Every structure is written in C-alpha cells, then in structure tokens.
Image (cartoon, helix red, strand yellow):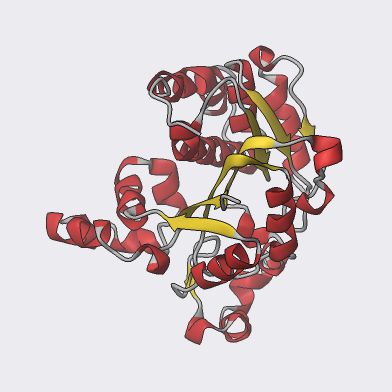
Length: 294
C-alpha cells in the first residue's frame, strides 16, 4: 500500500466537520450547561482526531477500511462523509454501556455521513466470507479492552488483504501506568493495584475489568504466531507530551496522572530524549502489522 499525500486537507476538514456539534455542546447554541455525557462526547471526538492522524498516511478512497471498536463512530462517520469506503464495528462491552446513547446523538447530527451505521459486532465475528477483505484495519485505544486479544488479532488477520496493513494505538503496560485511571500499576500487578486503589477502581469497576494489560512483548509474540511483520513507531511518548501542552481536553483527563509530568518533560533536552525512547518501552504504543510475503 502506497502512502498518500492529500490527507492534510482531510485533517483540517475534521475540525470544520465537528465545529457545529462542539459549539452546541459548549452551550454557545443551546445555552445549556455541559453534562457528563457531553464531556464524554467531546473526549471521543478528540480521540477520533488522534485516530485520523494515526491513519492519515494510509488513507486512500479506492481502498476498503475497517475500524475496530469505533466507539461513538466519530472518525468513521467523518471518513464516510468524505467518500471513504469504511466499515465500523463496535460491540458495546462492559464499562461502555453509555456508548449507544452517545452514538445516537452524534450520528443524529451528521447529515453528511449518509447511510453510515455502526455494526454491533466483535472481532471474533469477523469473517472473510461475510465481511470481505480490507486494505486498512485500525484501532485507537481499543486493544487493551479485548478479552481474547490473540483471537481478535487472528480474526483481523483473516480479513486483511495480502498487501494490507493494520495500524493500532493502545497503552503499553510494560510501562506500569494505567491511563484510564491515572494510577501506577504497582509492581506490574493488577491485583495489588486493585487492592491499593480499591475505592478509585470500584467507582469504575466495569472499566477496570475490561482491561487486559497488553504489553509490546505480548503483541510481538502474537505477531510471530500469526506470521505477521510488526513495526513499533518511535516518538510516541514525545507526541503524548506535546499533546498534553496543546489539547486542553486531553490535559484535563490526565491532570492527576501523566499530566503532572508534562512541564518537566517539555524541555528541549527531555523532548529529544523522548523522541529517541525505545518504542517497545513507550506508552502508548503505536505499531503496524502486515502479512509476510509468501
């Protein structure tokens, strides 16, 4: 798959596309105060923009695209409105029961998305016979919530074209930090962490139970079993620090966690170190997977 050069227009269009909805959420249209669900919707839209930047080099309107765990469907709906051939799947799993209502609100505001729908489907239900094959398969902060990660990646591989690519972004629990809760993973033990941070975790127990604590090592082992090549991208931690400085929504979400270190890590020396930080020891981790040539 060749890299594309026209995608900067699409990234710029993203802000324009969601501006009316974000303006309404901010109360500039409706005059309403922002609710918790409004805040969640703003977060999902912000994460969708991260996803767009993740896959921008691979976008091509002649290829088939599959988004795994599309959430409220913001990114896939936007790409659909721009004429991309995209399919989105999202099983509403444990810890995400509120997602269906957010999906309905978001899609109800998107006339340009046409007949776009999110399919209630899990990765293990993917099949070449039913779904066909895809040139690009991607996910953004989804893999850490999949119980049978080996099976899910196997199913994705089955529907990936021979010359296709998978692009994924997710936490790397080789670094003992849990970004959803903003807490350390004590001695790399989820059990010990759950006991020490009991009250904080119990407040969102379903979300905690959804985590599989995936690591770069596990991803590498799965890729070997599936006969896939894998490449972990450099510079992700530096990108995260830069986002903490430029994305108020992201900064607010991580104020009690990695956000505390953004100022410390913002010096030129620290940023240069993070740019060269080993990719398999970075969180989040970004990686591509491809089928090996016969």
